[in-house]
Structures are given as structure tokens and as C-alpha cells.
Image (cartoon, rainbow, N blue to C red; front, side, top):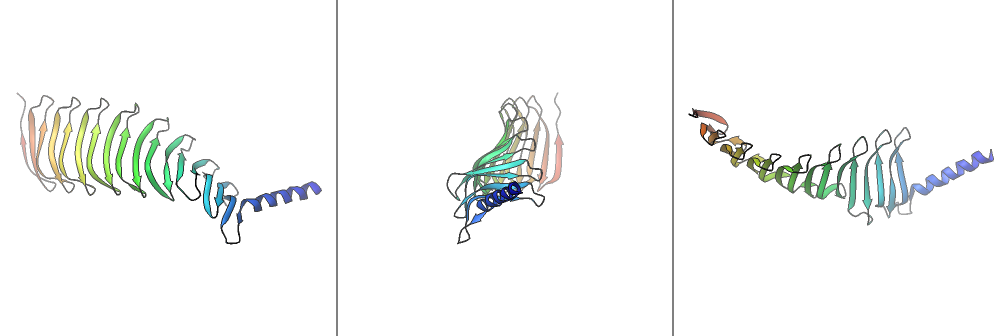
Length: 228
């Protein structure tokens, strides 16, 4: 009986030491929270109501899904997000709940899939997508959470497959695509996300084989040429 009472007292003391708030209602020291069925939801520490040190977050089955490390109480956190089977899914920094700076994303096999840049939680700057051998597959420019600027796709030999431009989230301006050799395949323009004006189509040899004329996305005319 004494052992049972002692165990209860130790557990009670430990729990009260964990989830403690001072006279001003500010969280202090170790804190944890469980799901209704008892498995851990998160665990970490507070200093004057602000997160400090390492925080760990778990899914409903008790597997860790992410962690954050605060060097300064309530400051910017270095964050790691995990895949369901335990590998790293993403690395980056958080300011509160907002992503900031460069974020890296990984495949289930561990190679780098993409990088993104954030400012106050919004994509801002270059987003890059990579092939499994780390060569660049795609580069897109973002401004304040919206695609703005150049968008380029590459093949595995680092040759440009497609190059277009975005304005306020819509394709706008000159757009070209290339054959695997690098020679031009198509060339034309977009206006507010729609094909507009003359579009030219070329064979691998460089000979023009077709021309189409568009008016705000509607195909108006087609002219076809054939190689001799």
C-alpha cells in the first residue's frame, strides 16, 4: 500500500511540475499535452509563456510528426517535419506559425525534391524542383505568395524544355518550348493566362511545320507546313 501511495505522489508531483503556470498565468518549465485517449500530442518547455528549447509533436498513433527548436524564448524556431515512416520530409525555420527563409523538402528515399523561399509565411523568391540526381528540373519565381516572373523547366541533361513568364499568377508574355536537343519546338505568347496571337511549331530539324493564331485563348486560324 505504501508503494502505491508513493507512486501516486511521485506521478502527481511530476505532472504538477510539468504543467505549471506562475502567478501571472504564464507557462513556465516543462509542458505536455495528451490526446483524449492518453497518447502524447506535444511536449516542450516554456519561459514566461514563450516556447524555449526543443518541442516535439506527435500524431494520434504516437509517431513524431514534427519538432521545433527555439534558441531564444518565443524566437525563430528551426523546424523539422517527418514522413509517416520516420524520414525527414522538410527542414526550415518558423517565425510563430509562419515559414521564413529557405525550406527544403525530401522524398521518401531521402533525396532533395525541392526548395522554396518564404517571407512572413508567403512564398517569395525562387522555388526549385530537382530530379533524383540533384539536377534542376524546374525553377519558378514567386512574389508575396503569387507566381511572378520567369518559369523554366529543364530536362535531365540540363537543357531548357520550356520557358515562360508569370504576371500576378497568370502566364503572360513570351513562351517557348524546346525539343530534347535544345532546338525550338513551339513559340508564342500568353495574355492573362490565355494563348494570344501567333504560335509557331517546329520540327526537330528546325523547319516550321505549323502556325496557329489565337485570340484570348480561342483558336482563330491554323496554317500547316510539311517537311520535304
